[in-house]
Image 1 (cartoon, one colour):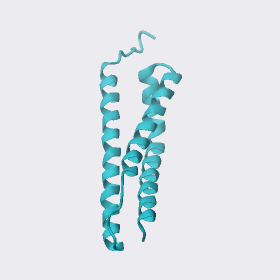
Image 2 (cartoon, helix red, strand yellow; image 1 turned 135 degrees about the vertical axis):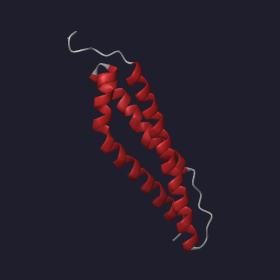
Image 3 (cartoon, one colour; image 1 turned 30 degrees about the vertical axis):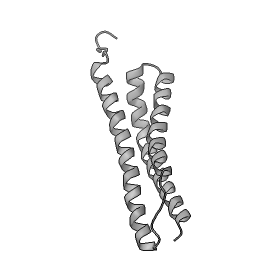
Image 4 (spheres, one colour; image 1 turned 90 degrees about the horizontal axis):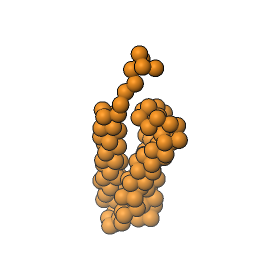
Length: 116
């Protein structure tokens, strides 16, 4: 396995996992954001912003990878370490968005059924 192929595998794996995870979460996040933002357009903006952050941040981390191993066995384990680091970046971004959405969900004014 050469280093260019290893780099491509790492980037593609990171992109695929982050994209699939976000597509799974997107409908749920959008409903929460529509409730918090009040309009569909505002929620759409924050959904796209979250998409860029959740896919772009780990992808940016993965593009900084430069394989140094020469043997296939060493290269495999270096790839797994780098991919796990990229997914850690994804989790940091996900937790950051979760904290922000949770904060605004707690402080957002609620309309009661009687006032509607």
